[in-house]
Image 1 (cartoon, rainbow, N blue to C red):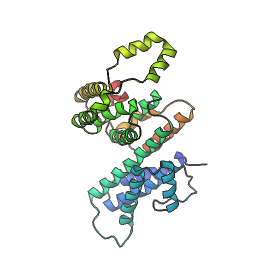
Image 2 (image 1 turned 30 degrees about the vertical axis):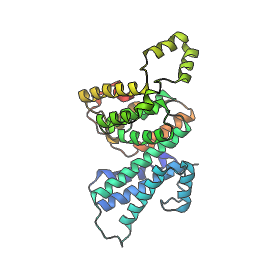
Image 3 (image 1 turned 90 degrees about the vertical axis):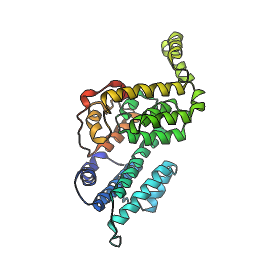
Image 4 (image 1 turned 30 degrees about the horizontal axis):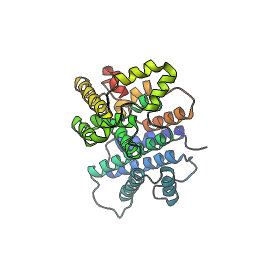
Length: 299
């Protein structure tokens, strides 16, 4: 028996409260984030509660390297949280622990979250399941950005990754950064069609040549055009309605209502398990859910 979310519900609830929801010294916040990071590592390695896990344990480090292909986003972030945790738990470390130290720990925790999805989408191709794409969009933009940026580095020809990454740059940062990302890759994106030959063949098989040809006729001529158009369109929606959710707390109710997928396939069960775990302990607080726009959610 490996890792079970339910086993860690109470512990995660306590650690999330201690790290994010109560007023306590920065030293204590970082100590809780380190403890929580150990639980996240258990999740990544699928280890039961009977196995000992510490971030500095060499056997655990080697397992993480093997599972992730020595992914530096994951490995460096785990080590930075380890070092910060040591600084906050060893009595010879008497210096001040600042808000910046806490923010750095949270940034590295988010990198580890993103790494979970990178590993998942290395197993199940990003963009191959529309329901998973819909639920993936019910994550804070910064988590999606970190995951998609890493996936793009690994697989820059994946059209779904390109599309979603260009949009999440808008949501996590701003339009200028999103447009700059597209412009920096203009030459390559201009040469990349906004549909795949394989996808068109599937449509031909299921719906016939006419339907496939209609998609080709209506599709933007390239990924450069597609990304630019969609950034401009989604920016208008955000200006009109505001950003629907920007963190786990704002997104949680939407996740509970719309993000839990039906199905017994391993792809679905694995994804549901990840999402359930990441939302454990998070409060629900969002006054903007009456502004839900399907385009905003799905993209």
